[in-house]
Length: 315
Picture (cartoon, one colour):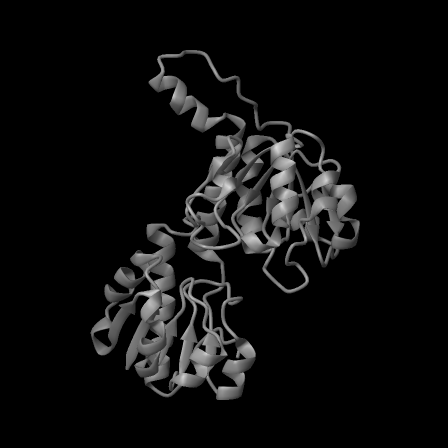
Protein backbone atom coordinates (compact mmCIF):
# COMPACT_ATOMS: atom_id res chain seq x y z
CA UNK A 1 0.00 0.00 0.00
CA UNK A 2 1.51 3.30 -1.14
CA UNK A 3 1.19 6.20 1.33
CA UNK A 4 1.95 9.65 -0.10
CA UNK A 5 2.85 12.72 1.94
CA UNK A 6 1.72 15.57 -0.30
CA UNK A 7 4.14 18.47 -0.22
CA UNK A 8 7.42 19.48 1.35
CA UNK A 9 6.00 21.22 4.44
CA UNK A 10 5.93 19.69 7.94
CA UNK A 11 8.85 17.30 7.23
CA UNK A 12 8.76 15.81 10.73
CA UNK A 13 5.40 14.19 9.97
CA UNK A 14 6.97 11.85 7.42
CA UNK A 15 9.83 10.99 9.79
CA UNK A 16 7.50 10.25 12.71
CA UNK A 17 5.31 7.91 10.69
CA UNK A 18 8.36 5.99 9.50
CA UNK A 19 9.22 5.33 13.17
CA UNK A 20 5.91 3.58 13.84
CA UNK A 21 6.22 -0.18 14.55
CA UNK A 22 4.28 -1.25 11.41
CA UNK A 23 5.78 1.35 9.05
CA UNK A 24 7.68 -1.30 7.07
CA UNK A 25 4.36 -2.76 5.87
CA UNK A 26 3.78 0.30 3.72
CA UNK A 27 5.52 2.17 0.95
CA UNK A 28 5.66 5.58 2.62
CA UNK A 29 6.93 8.35 0.33
CA UNK A 30 6.83 12.12 0.08
CA UNK A 31 6.66 14.36 -2.96
CA UNK A 32 7.20 18.05 -3.64
CA UNK A 33 4.01 19.98 -4.24
CA UNK A 34 5.02 20.47 -7.88
CA UNK A 35 5.08 16.66 -8.34
CA UNK A 36 1.71 16.01 -6.76
CA UNK A 37 -0.31 15.58 -9.95
CA UNK A 38 1.79 12.64 -11.11
CA UNK A 39 2.62 11.19 -7.70
CA UNK A 40 -0.97 10.92 -6.49
CA UNK A 41 -1.94 8.66 -9.41
CA UNK A 42 -0.11 5.72 -7.84
CA UNK A 43 -1.05 6.41 -4.22
CA UNK A 44 -3.52 4.46 -2.11
CA UNK A 45 -3.44 6.95 0.75
CA UNK A 46 -2.81 10.70 0.54
CA UNK A 47 -1.71 12.75 3.55
CA UNK A 48 -2.33 16.34 2.41
CA UNK A 49 -0.25 18.40 4.85
CA UNK A 50 -0.86 21.90 3.37
CA UNK A 51 -1.50 20.71 -0.20
CA UNK A 52 -4.94 21.19 -1.70
CA UNK A 53 -6.54 17.85 -2.63
CA UNK A 54 -9.12 19.01 -5.15
CA UNK A 55 -11.58 17.21 -7.40
CA UNK A 56 -9.12 16.83 -10.28
CA UNK A 57 -6.54 15.12 -8.07
CA UNK A 58 -9.15 12.86 -6.51
CA UNK A 59 -10.54 11.88 -9.92
CA UNK A 60 -7.11 11.26 -11.45
CA UNK A 61 -6.03 8.43 -9.17
CA UNK A 62 -7.29 5.44 -7.25
CA UNK A 63 -7.06 6.78 -3.69
CA UNK A 64 -8.70 4.72 -0.98
CA UNK A 65 -8.14 7.16 1.87
CA UNK A 66 -7.26 10.82 2.37
CA UNK A 67 -5.82 10.98 5.87
CA UNK A 68 -5.19 14.40 7.40
CA UNK A 69 -2.19 14.80 9.69
CA UNK A 70 -4.26 16.72 12.23
CA UNK A 71 -7.80 18.04 12.33
CA UNK A 72 -8.36 20.62 9.58
CA UNK A 73 -9.88 19.35 6.34
CA UNK A 74 -10.66 22.62 4.56
CA UNK A 75 -8.03 21.76 1.93
CA UNK A 76 -9.85 18.60 0.84
CA UNK A 77 -12.76 18.58 -1.61
CA UNK A 78 -15.07 16.45 0.51
CA UNK A 79 -17.85 16.28 -2.07
CA UNK A 80 -15.47 15.04 -4.76
CA UNK A 81 -14.14 12.42 -2.35
CA UNK A 82 -17.65 11.30 -1.51
CA UNK A 83 -18.56 11.07 -5.18
CA UNK A 84 -15.46 8.94 -5.92
CA UNK A 85 -15.95 6.74 -2.84
CA UNK A 86 -12.73 7.88 -1.18
CA UNK A 87 -12.72 7.83 2.61
CA UNK A 88 -11.54 11.01 4.34
CA UNK A 89 -10.33 10.94 7.95
CA UNK A 90 -8.60 13.28 10.36
CA UNK A 91 -7.01 13.20 13.79
CA UNK A 92 -9.12 15.37 16.13
CA UNK A 93 -7.31 18.21 17.88
CA UNK A 94 -7.24 16.77 21.38
CA UNK A 95 -4.74 15.28 23.81
CA UNK A 96 -1.13 16.26 23.24
CA UNK A 97 -1.94 18.24 20.10
CA UNK A 98 -4.40 20.51 21.91
CA UNK A 99 -1.99 20.86 24.82
CA UNK A 100 0.86 21.77 22.47
CA UNK A 101 -1.19 24.44 20.71
CA UNK A 102 -2.32 25.84 24.06
CA UNK A 103 1.28 26.14 25.26
CA UNK A 104 2.16 27.98 22.05
CA UNK A 105 -0.77 30.36 22.51
CA UNK A 106 0.40 31.23 26.02
CA UNK A 107 3.92 31.77 24.69
CA UNK A 108 2.64 34.21 22.04
CA UNK A 109 0.56 36.12 24.60
CA UNK A 110 3.54 36.55 26.91
CA UNK A 111 5.88 37.42 24.03
CA UNK A 112 3.51 40.18 22.92
CA UNK A 113 3.03 41.64 26.38
CA UNK A 114 6.72 41.58 27.20
CA UNK A 115 7.80 42.75 23.71
CA UNK A 116 10.12 39.80 23.22
CA UNK A 117 11.49 40.78 19.75
CA UNK A 118 12.47 44.23 21.04
CA UNK A 119 14.13 42.60 24.07
CA UNK A 120 16.40 40.64 21.76
CA UNK A 121 17.33 43.76 19.80
CA UNK A 122 18.12 45.70 22.99
CA UNK A 123 20.33 42.95 24.41
CA UNK A 124 22.42 43.02 21.23
CA UNK A 125 22.55 46.83 21.38
CA UNK A 126 23.77 46.83 24.98
CA UNK A 127 20.62 48.45 26.34
CA UNK A 128 19.32 47.55 29.78
CA UNK A 129 15.92 48.16 31.40
CA UNK A 130 13.92 48.57 28.18
CA UNK A 131 11.33 47.89 26.86
CA UNK A 132 8.60 48.36 29.43
CA UNK A 133 6.36 45.28 29.36
CA UNK A 134 2.82 44.59 30.47
CA UNK A 135 1.58 42.06 33.03
CA UNK A 136 -0.84 39.35 31.99
CA UNK A 137 -2.46 39.14 35.42
CA UNK A 138 -5.76 40.99 35.61
CA UNK A 139 -6.32 41.10 31.83
CA UNK A 140 -9.49 39.84 30.19
CA UNK A 141 -8.75 37.06 27.72
CA UNK A 142 -11.50 36.06 25.29
CA UNK A 143 -11.49 32.58 23.75
CA UNK A 144 -13.36 32.76 20.44
CA UNK A 145 -14.55 29.20 19.90
CA UNK A 146 -14.78 26.69 22.72
CA UNK A 147 -13.32 23.34 21.69
CA UNK A 148 -10.43 21.17 22.83
CA UNK A 149 -7.76 23.80 22.18
CA UNK A 150 -9.73 26.49 24.02
CA UNK A 151 -10.18 24.14 26.98
CA UNK A 152 -6.44 23.40 27.11
CA UNK A 153 -5.66 27.11 26.79
CA UNK A 154 -8.12 28.03 29.53
CA UNK A 155 -6.55 25.49 31.87
CA UNK A 156 -3.13 27.04 31.40
CA UNK A 157 -4.28 30.64 31.70
CA UNK A 158 -6.02 30.05 35.03
CA UNK A 159 -2.66 30.19 36.79
CA UNK A 160 -1.95 33.65 35.39
CA UNK A 161 -4.83 35.22 37.30
CA UNK A 162 -6.64 36.42 34.20
CA UNK A 163 -10.36 36.95 33.66
CA UNK A 164 -11.51 34.45 31.05
CA UNK A 165 -14.55 34.90 28.82
CA UNK A 166 -15.69 32.92 25.80
CA UNK A 167 -17.65 33.15 22.56
CA UNK A 168 -19.38 30.03 21.23
CA UNK A 169 -22.22 28.97 18.96
CA UNK A 170 -23.70 26.93 21.80
CA UNK A 171 -23.50 28.70 25.18
CA UNK A 172 -25.24 25.81 26.94
CA UNK A 173 -25.77 25.69 30.66
CA UNK A 174 -22.65 24.57 32.49
CA UNK A 175 -20.24 25.38 29.67
CA UNK A 176 -18.87 28.47 31.40
CA UNK A 177 -18.01 26.45 34.47
CA UNK A 178 -16.51 23.67 32.32
CA UNK A 179 -14.04 26.13 30.79
CA UNK A 180 -13.55 28.24 33.91
CA UNK A 181 -15.09 31.32 32.31
CA UNK A 182 -16.30 34.41 34.10
CA UNK A 183 -18.80 34.97 31.27
CA UNK A 184 -19.93 33.18 28.12
CA UNK A 185 -21.48 34.73 25.01
CA UNK A 186 -23.16 33.37 21.92
CA UNK A 187 -21.75 34.32 18.52
CA UNK A 188 -24.76 36.63 18.13
CA UNK A 189 -23.58 38.47 21.26
CA UNK A 190 -19.94 38.67 20.29
CA UNK A 191 -19.77 42.49 20.29
CA UNK A 192 -20.46 42.52 24.03
CA UNK A 193 -17.62 40.07 24.61
CA UNK A 194 -15.16 41.79 22.30
CA UNK A 195 -15.83 45.18 23.89
CA UNK A 196 -14.37 43.97 27.19
CA UNK A 197 -11.47 41.97 25.72
CA UNK A 198 -7.80 42.78 26.26
CA UNK A 199 -6.48 39.70 24.46
CA UNK A 200 -8.50 37.86 21.81
CA UNK A 201 -7.47 34.25 21.22
CA UNK A 202 -9.02 32.69 18.12
CA UNK A 203 -9.80 29.00 18.62
CA UNK A 204 -12.57 28.53 16.03
CA UNK A 205 -12.74 25.86 13.38
CA UNK A 206 -12.58 27.00 9.77
CA UNK A 207 -16.06 26.72 8.30
CA UNK A 208 -17.59 28.63 5.37
CA UNK A 209 -19.58 30.86 7.71
CA UNK A 210 -16.52 31.59 9.87
CA UNK A 211 -14.23 32.59 6.99
CA UNK A 212 -13.29 36.25 7.43
CA UNK A 213 -15.56 36.55 10.47
CA UNK A 214 -12.94 38.50 12.44
CA UNK A 215 -13.76 41.49 10.26
CA UNK A 216 -13.59 45.26 10.48
CA UNK A 217 -16.61 45.38 12.79
CA UNK A 218 -15.14 42.82 15.19
CA UNK A 219 -11.72 44.46 15.23
CA UNK A 220 -13.20 47.90 15.73
CA UNK A 221 -15.22 46.60 18.69
CA UNK A 222 -12.07 45.48 20.48
CA UNK A 223 -10.77 48.19 22.83
CA UNK A 224 -7.85 50.31 21.57
CA UNK A 225 -4.58 48.72 22.59
CA UNK A 226 -5.89 45.15 22.63
CA UNK A 227 -3.99 42.12 21.32
CA UNK A 228 -4.94 39.23 19.05
CA UNK A 229 -3.49 35.70 18.93
CA UNK A 230 -4.33 33.22 16.18
CA UNK A 231 -3.14 29.61 16.09
CA UNK A 232 -6.33 28.31 14.46
CA UNK A 233 -6.62 29.25 10.75
CA UNK A 234 -5.52 32.42 8.97
CA UNK A 235 -8.67 32.66 6.88
CA UNK A 236 -10.78 33.33 9.97
CA UNK A 237 -9.47 36.92 9.91
CA UNK A 238 -10.34 39.51 7.27
CA UNK A 239 -6.87 40.34 5.99
CA UNK A 240 -7.20 44.00 4.99
CA UNK A 241 -9.17 44.97 8.08
CA UNK A 242 -6.57 43.23 10.23
CA UNK A 243 -3.66 45.00 8.57
CA UNK A 244 -5.41 48.35 8.96
CA UNK A 245 -6.03 47.73 12.68
CA UNK A 246 -2.36 46.84 13.23
CA UNK A 247 -1.03 49.79 11.23
CA UNK A 248 -3.26 52.28 13.02
CA UNK A 249 -2.29 50.95 16.44
CA UNK A 250 -5.88 50.09 17.33
CA UNK A 251 -4.49 46.59 17.75
CA UNK A 252 -1.38 46.90 19.89
CA UNK A 253 -0.04 43.67 18.47
CA UNK A 254 -0.73 40.21 17.13
CA UNK A 255 0.80 36.78 17.61
CA UNK A 256 0.24 34.57 14.57
CA UNK A 257 1.04 30.95 13.77
CA UNK A 258 -1.28 30.67 10.74
CA UNK A 259 -1.82 32.77 7.62
CA UNK A 260 -4.07 33.31 4.61
CA UNK A 261 -1.52 31.70 2.29
CA UNK A 262 0.88 29.13 3.64
CA UNK A 263 3.74 29.32 3.64
CA UNK A 264 3.36 33.07 3.92
CA UNK A 265 5.51 34.89 1.32
CA UNK A 266 8.64 36.25 3.03
CA UNK A 267 7.99 39.76 1.70
CA UNK A 268 4.37 39.88 2.86
CA UNK A 269 3.75 43.34 4.40
CA UNK A 270 2.36 41.68 7.52
CA UNK A 271 5.84 40.41 8.43
CA UNK A 272 7.30 43.92 8.24
CA UNK A 273 5.02 45.26 10.99
CA UNK A 274 6.90 45.77 14.27
CA UNK A 275 3.86 44.77 16.37
CA UNK A 276 3.53 41.29 14.83
CA UNK A 277 5.14 38.15 16.21
CA UNK A 278 5.01 35.38 13.61
CA UNK A 279 5.78 31.68 13.90
CA UNK A 280 5.73 29.11 11.02
CA UNK A 281 2.61 27.02 11.82
CA UNK A 282 4.38 25.13 14.60
CA UNK A 283 1.89 25.40 17.46
CA UNK A 284 1.07 21.70 17.24
CA UNK A 285 4.51 20.57 16.10
CA UNK A 286 5.95 18.99 19.25
CA UNK A 287 7.43 15.61 20.04
CA UNK A 288 4.43 14.32 21.99
CA UNK A 289 1.85 15.78 19.64
CA UNK A 290 3.46 14.23 16.57
CA UNK A 291 3.99 10.86 18.22
CA UNK A 292 0.30 10.78 19.11
CA UNK A 293 -0.79 11.80 15.61
CA UNK A 294 1.60 9.30 14.01
CA UNK A 295 0.13 6.50 16.10
CA UNK A 296 -3.41 7.49 15.08
CA UNK A 297 -2.47 7.62 11.38
CA UNK A 298 -0.68 4.27 11.62
CA UNK A 299 -3.79 2.77 13.21
CA UNK A 300 -5.90 3.93 10.27
CA UNK A 301 -3.41 2.56 7.76
CA UNK A 302 -3.60 -0.83 9.43
CA UNK A 303 -7.40 -0.74 9.50
CA UNK A 304 -7.43 0.12 5.81
CA UNK A 305 -4.96 -2.68 5.04
CA UNK A 306 -7.29 -5.12 6.80
CA UNK A 307 -10.29 -3.87 4.85
CA UNK A 308 -11.85 -2.24 7.91
CA UNK A 309 -13.32 1.24 8.40
CA UNK A 310 -10.72 3.88 9.40
CA UNK A 311 -11.34 5.89 12.55
CA UNK A 312 -12.57 9.50 12.57
CA UNK A 313 -13.93 9.44 9.02
CA UNK A 314 -15.85 12.51 7.91
CA UNK A 315 -16.62 11.01 4.48
